[in-house]
Image (cartoon, rainbow, N blue to C red):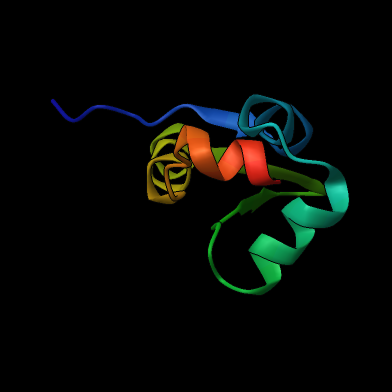
Length: 67
């Protein structure tokens, strides 16, 4: 039996990733975050959201202090 990936509503996925809507739409347009449509609703697969978050660069403490 295959596992079915959970679909997360786009707005909820944005919140989970700590993104504002403009940044989220930019990531989709750039092909860095894949979405799926079901009728008029837009979703992000749970595995895709995990992949996207894992692909973000780690920030060291020194970089945060200089920001």
